[in-house]
Image 1 (cartoon, rainbow, N blue to C red):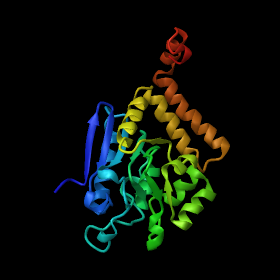
Image 2: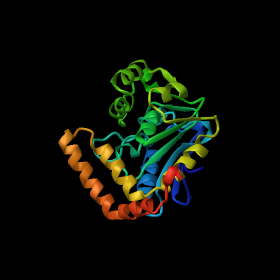
Image 3: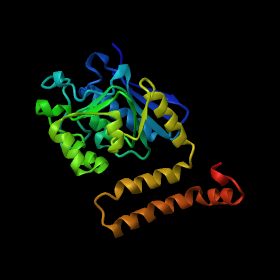
Image 4: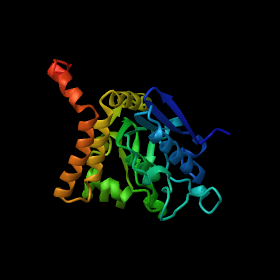
Amino acid sequence: MHEPVTVENDGPVTTVVLHRPHARNAVDGPTAKALADAFRAFDADESRSVAVLYGDGGTFCAGADLKAIGTERGNQVQGTGDGPMGPTRLRLGKPVVAAIEGYAVAGGLELAIWCDLRVAAEDATLGVFCRRWGVPLIDGGTVRLPRLVGTGRALDLVLTGRGVGAEEARQMGLVDRVVPTGTARQAAEELAHQLSEVPQACLRQDRLSLLEQQGLSEDEAMTNELRHGLVSLQSGALDGAQRFASGEGRHGV
């Protein structure tokens, strides 16, 4: 039996791989726990800067494993702790990039939009396919989806359950990059390495300020931005400014 979740490290980049090909990478309870544990370990590892989430075998994730419901392998649905799909209630201190091949649907869509950025193969399909089975979005789908694409587009996807191709998903802001089929993991890992090369303290603090401003008043958000910015200023911003003043980075180089 293969482990349903594996972790591969390449310098500062960690790739978390879903591997349940017999179930199109649908997530059952043990797999959800393994996913959450993998991302907690990544977040705690000071040598890793960016993670990639990838579904092996041509499918990103088909959602929760409905065949496991009512069994000892069923997803846990509780008010506290991890989400039914695993890491969807975690707010990591570092970015995660989704590498989407094939279907990212139902809970798989919720995993994808939990990530910070999404790289999709040109034949990928995203959607709320659980609509047809009466299974709700309970891993942040109704929260994160409208924040990504707007309420109108989110309602279209949530109410109809229709599939969205990669190019339409890019146009509505649901994915950030569209790449040739079979290259999503490579492209996502290349993007992750690019992110890992910039000053990490500032990247992480700006990211957290952006995420945390949701629900805050403008004054509260500005105060929170300053709080994070001060951390960055104390963590190497002066060195960066001096390098720029000395000529580094001129003309985008």
